[in-house]
Image 1 (tube, protein in one colour):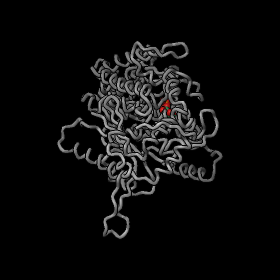
Image 2 (cartoon, helix red, strand yellow; image 1 turned 30 degrees about the horizontal axis):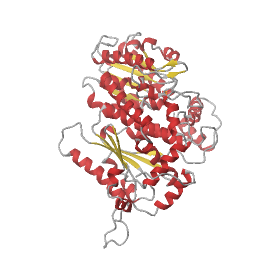
Image 3 (cartoon, helix red, strand yellow; image 1 turned 180 degrees about the vertical axis):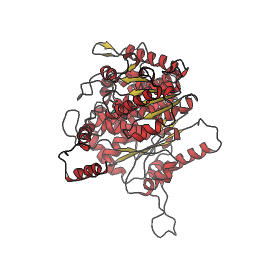
Image 4 (cartoon, helix red, strand yellow; image 1 turned 30 degrees about the vertical axis):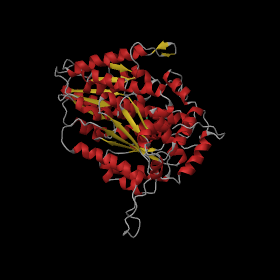
Length: 532
Ligand code: F6P
């Protein structure tokens, strides 16, 4: 079905023409033209199936999108990332998260040093520690075994392990509670701790920088709680471990270097779940299962690195995202997992995608002239159907998205799974093909216009392995898009100003003199001060 791209326009210009042409062609028509379009536009890797046939594309569109990826040097970009080039130019770093799942024995040289043995050394330390906690050998200050593990972190030091734990908790131990605290809002920590016992609680303070105010505030409060609850000044050593790149900051907090699990500046926060940031998950599901997650991610890494773009799942997802963002002007993108266990996947992907590619300056420092990341959002099905699907079917905005289904459930309740999956299939069919209004309808209230595109991703079961595949799939989708847009997907300068202003305002809230602010902010601060 491939047609060579031989015209003299740039792929971008040819895609603009293509969009104008396809704007007048319905998905119904595209399917009628090609009876086997469904299977023909399905790509598969190692059990992960991507049906992209319900998109507003024809074979030529895909060729042009692949030509765009080639013209933008995506292949070289992937190699640069996977071999440790400092592609995070604004921070002068590599983005080598793929090394976190490289098998022992492979070599990845960064600044003359092989990082793979380091990765496996930390994995071994994590495994030994996880086993000690799981088997009750690691004891709290009073000699009691650990019954609750609380990960304190935020952003990439929370969303990955929290999402993965929610997805895989069936693989966990009944005897161990695992919780995640991220928000500086004290309600989060208070609710987390309300039914836990200090004697049996272990905190993992996860922070790449170990300077993040939310995490440190929660960690200091948790430390007070442990000290008060155990009445032992030495209890910190038994109830706190750290995951960080910043040993000096960890020691400043009072956590021994021996109780710190290391990762490296070449692991971006939002790419860090497969690093020591996954420690809480490893304790929950066990080291063997955690290694399965790494193996799943590795399988997708290799696919991304070697498969031709036209059959490459992350590249296809990325290119289709570019197609809707830049050529159809879609402002948002929905992630719709038809699986309650993946309820936190949209939140995880929000950081992955929007913090990576939500930028308007290019890699070379000049302003970008194309739109970049869309707003990522979503909820599990079928809940979303009873909330926002009205807009997806009949609203005035185009919202492409991914429907994610799992073929075999992990529960044994009869009837549920067929209904769940029937809804997934029905929704993508209804969105794509719509339905004319009934004759007797006076207006078009009951018309379903159709032509609303979606991808369907299917995995056989939700396991550590397939979750690892999904994580790497989306990481590489995001990379593909960032590379094509000319974005550095690995920095996040856009979060800094708010942090600086919050520090300044925090100092003012209880001081005599207020700082200089606009009239809105000043009045809001004043209301708060008056309420104190
Ligand atoms: O503020 C954004 C951010 O830097 C994210 O990129 C990061 O994942 C999060 O904060 C947490 O950072 P840290 O792991 O250093 O605490």
